[in-house]
Length: 218
Image (tube, rainbow, N blue to C red):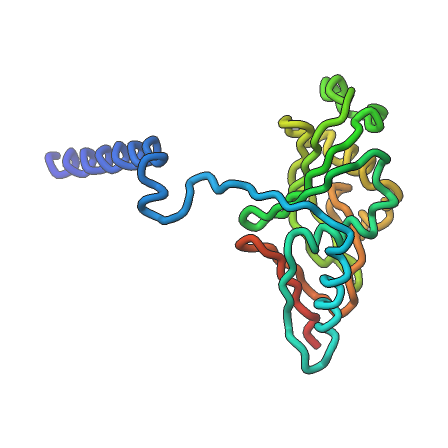
């Protein structure tokens, strides 16, 4: 019986120590790991001139004896995605910025929200669509078919408020007009922005603040 009590006591002690460590992590995390507990998000503007150098590095993958991968900055990837979809975005999109945190890419822009008030399924969120606000979409790009990529949106924030899941697809369809057939290819239930990639690009991965494109294996 005493052995059982000792085991239970040790288990309780471990739970208490673990809980204490979790509650006080703000005090010791950075000193112990060398990394901030809440990494600061650094935003970079997306410029039209980001596209050409990115395309040049991607085209190098086509060479038989060339590199098997190439690394792009978040701005270059966003320029490639938005370069094609720009004509499908609603009017009044300004100040596009991008950032990578962990394994996700975020794109933020100032949007005239009055153009989105007609979207169905917004509920109380519609009351917020009355002025220009920052809109942030976060997700991961991937190759969904030969020559076709998709930016799968995991979250969408209007101002600082996250759009509820039922309205997410409707808002994305409004932000990325005219691509319904291509969304079916992406297989993401309408929660993606599709874009073209060269047929020799086989994979896209986001990690450690950068985006890596891999060539298709023979």
